[in-house]
Image (tube, rainbow, N blue to C red; front, side, top):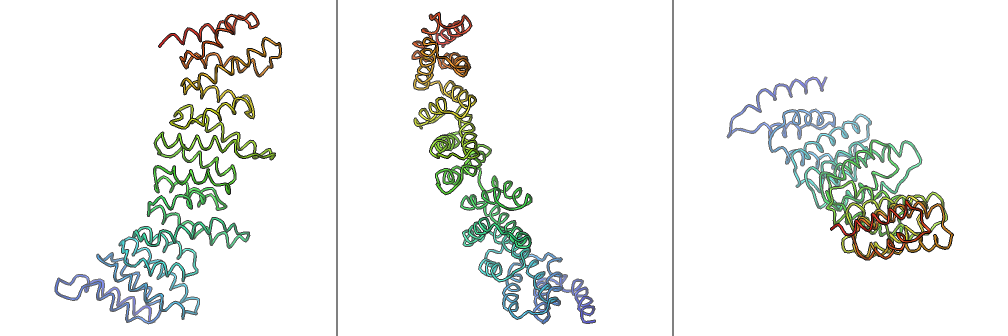
Length: 400
């Protein structure tokens, strides 16, 4: 009966107090009186619902005060129905404070994150911190998500609860739009969560920053991350809006990392090879910038690559780089294969490689390559087809 009377009273207030003119008591102040005069949690919930529905301007201070009151009351709430009403109150307050961008409520909102156990309430409160731009709590949210990323719970119920909180933290960091939140969201996108959370995290990354180069370089440089994560970091860099110069840095480092890690594990060896191949393709398209270490790593890919495709990719990249140093490497590769041809120790792989090496060297238009091409062109050890290719490559070098 008390709820019915309260509902009628709310309906009456909505038609009277909010229509009052300036100089009289404002509608919001009247709602505050009603809310403060309500001692029960369900009653307070109805008052908050009414205020939220009205969408009163400048409601931030009201909802901040409501949150402070709720935090004072919450430790004494015992009945299940009251706890449910308290959770609903917190949800409304969080949404309204976030919408109002009432940053002054930041300390109380974070206190509520720590106080409430309902994961949906925590999630909404975290989102409110991001919406209001409470930057003092940016690191708190990032750390919370980092902790959840490493949790890896085994119980289904714990997984569900943690995933809900993580979802709110992800959206919060997206709203903050600060690069310090990138890595926690990156690891969430590639973590233990269900597809809903991981998809949301992946979509949030581009909203946090267009250029994730620096945090992704940290991933590649860290010995604590497995090669699978480093390969993902490379792929995320390529898919980002980072400038080509930044992508070159990441590709060069990833290529180097692909050779630094030694393993006898077949799966890991394949992952490292895939990362090297991906890096090589980026280098082929973007170049090498000022990083001369790329030459040595490309030479190693040619000489020690996991399969013929990695070796062919290295040839293509060196040909596209087209510097004197790149041409010198291709020239040396051809001379080595040519020596095997002369000693009658040519392998089937060598025959595939020479078909790519000759036009690749010609495309560089670097005179340093004339040495090997001329030897192949004049040698009777090679078939007419290979010698003809050498002739065409030499002609390409003269076409500037």
